[in-house]
Image (cartoon, rainbow, N blue to C red):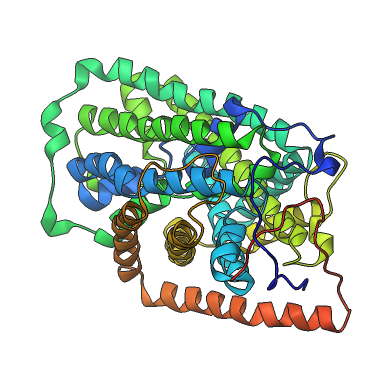
Amino acid sequence: MVDTTSADYVELGEVSSPKLEKYQKVSIIPLVFLIFYEVSGGPFGVEDSVQAAGPLLALLGFLIVPFVWSVPEALITAELGTMFPENGGYVIWVSSALGPFWGFQQGWMKWLSGVIDNALYPVLFLDYMKSAIPALEGGFPRTIAVLVLTVSLTFLNYRGLTIVGQVAILLGVFSLLPFIFMGIVAIPKLEPSRWFVVDFGNMDWGLYLNTLFWNLNYWDSISTLAGEVETPSKTLPKALLYAVILVVFGYFFPLLVGTGAIPLDHGKWTDGYFSDIAKMLGGVWLRSWVQAASALSNMGMFVAEMSSDSFQLQGMAERGMLPEFFGTRSRYGTPIIGILFSASGVLLLSCLSFQEIVAAENFLYCFGMVMEFIAFVKLRMKYPAASRPYKIPISTTGSILMCIPPTLLIFVVLAFASYKIMAISILAVMIGLVLHPCLHYLEKKRWVRFSMNTDLPDVHYQ
């Protein structure tokens, strides 16, 4: 690997590689919807929160947890994403604060959690479609459907990030509209008393917290696309703000409608239940719209996540942290090898169940977020005068205090993980610890070529 341990810190700002000028940059509206799909994609997948905790805690969870988790993560992403406006994203943040070894570990855990996350979307898609097409419930037809979906959406990623952004806008509008109509037709049936139902005796805290956490994280994923954004110092903070509002509304409003208009049946509140609610409120046509919206929303989440994962690998290669071939771009400006690696991981993991995928992904993601919080505070303390086009208007002490609530939430989520998920996740972390020296060995033997993109600015490494 390229030796970065002696790199000097220089002021960062709006830096653009001359090699990338021929590729069209992403503007604010597509960026908002890319973030929307990185994080949410709509209310598909939040149903388990009602089954686990009842309507009241489900509604409160999607109002309160964004302030504890989503807002701090989005603010940190805005500050560090504009401080380091390149495709490595959070990998570069951690490398700059803690050194390249820990930066690599951050990249490994975040990439793996992202691929695990992407394996969810074919599962969710088929869960919504199986009520209309029962053959998709399992067996060979389901396997073929997963393969066709993955290959088709991988090709869309290959065609370019600008196309992905434009598609995200169309899919986002189409996916949210049926819930607006559902809210309108539900007005005569709303009973506010249903919103206050809670049963602490039958709480499934693990399922509840994992559902909330999974649906409200990944705000930092957009940072791995910062090098593809038009004027990131201005565009990225605004896009994150608009996306937070869109995501919270996209969760809370459908839950408010569904729990208020339909008598509570805990057992039915699971993946795909919103389509049944749509049928009860508006008929078959509305159910079909919700199912179509779910299918298209999962496509949007898949292409957005794969864009983030693949550009992360490309950004790491440009910093000499991965072999040079990971930095190869297609004629559309997309990272070919990163896309193929991410798609392969999705296919390998798509056989897992929804809840298993969520739990495993959350566990790995938590490790990465702890390192991000440490990197954020350390960069504030050691380099207070560094260029930060967007800076959270709080002191260093305020930065530490801001990171405490989400860190506590991380430990709570980890505590509710099963022993199986803990074992698998710790094994994955250990693989990353071994992988880094193995890559060093490959480079030392000259079996694989590593290189640094000279168009990127120098950054400090500890």
